[in-house]
Length: 556
Image 1 (tube, rainbow, N blue to C red):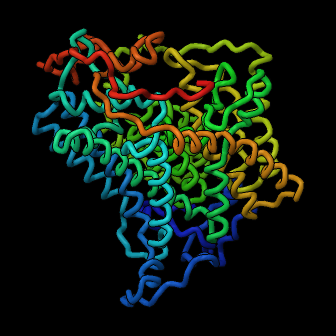
Image 2 (cartoon, rainbow, N blue to C red; image 1 turned 90 degrees about the horizontal axis):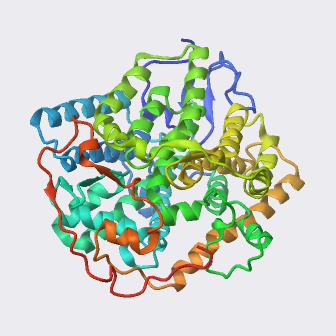
């Protein structure tokens, strides 16, 4: 168990992005990261050279002094963990599982999980981002969610027609409920649960604002924790810019098939399959994006020894109710982490207990997501070899070629190989009736690739000026995908509130596709979570689901 301290606080592992001090007996890690290097023992944390100086304890005078204070990493990491855990409790209420013993078990398991995560407790000002960094990240996240249409201040893309209807159904109908068809809503509804509770109390506007606040908070916290991966403010800004601009060369794909895209066009549908840009993910599918980015962040924190294996292993069951596909996309990285820590003999009891606790509280959600799985299924997705090669040439190969020079960097080596394998294999797999697996299971891999490339531009690993220029050129072309999404948000009218239920809203835009990814027959639900006496809701919808037109983007 050399180099591993069982029970070390996540505060210790989620340390500041500045350089760490290492004991004289332990060599510094090589430029190639931790893989293959002997285990090191961290004995202190320094402030990064780009960080503002810390004020003396108890000073607290002035805005600059307050903004320079650090937020404990344990506290920040606990925010998404606690939020996801509460979603799992609300799902039990949504299913009508309201036995006091169940709630007591949830409370005990959740308290045990948090107790294990924070052992031993310590007050370390250096263990997280500054308040200024946190506020900046919350601002960036809120801006992204606003431009994506949340809160109804800007245009929302067509997927939100169905998403709004799901949130409306969960708001206006008593829990549990089934539709007149006898089907029950069975989908990754984690993102909707807390906003639906707010909507029951404050109406549609309350649900909309709660959704905006929830997603902005979670994404902002993830960005703030992620900033600690980079030691200085310039490096953090570079990494954030690369992450936000990251996309395949979709505009070239549109030109290749003969289209001349308008400034507000949706560029990513040019091929039979698709990888989604960062901005597209934030605007179209924030539930999948947040789940996938949380998993990618957890893996990178494990990679740099700031998060133990147990903290990483508890993420898939917690995020599955938001996005089972993103959780699937995280599994190859988790398998590697398990193999690596087993080989290094640094598995502790904590690493086993945390995922057990997380899986126990997520068990009803896992049963719920898996219900009627035969209607969804997994299969090979046939792609013509020429289409597949063109797609990978414009979406993955150029970035992987640039990234491969950083094989010995901290996010290189086996991590980069797994990333490449995911991007090459995912388009050939189909789960459900559409290309969702390729679009959503690749979210962790794409995020890791973007942060690896951002590390290079920030000087984290050496690269020639030509290689850096090539990456900047690729990012400039790829960023047109996200910029077109932003242009549409700023020029199209804000989305109208929903007036229809799920089924009617689905038929308005997606009638050619089956509803099996959102519905399951009541008798197909596992007996342990099947509602005993659900309310049967009315299907009396108005002729039009919205009081005004909902524009359709070009090339969608």
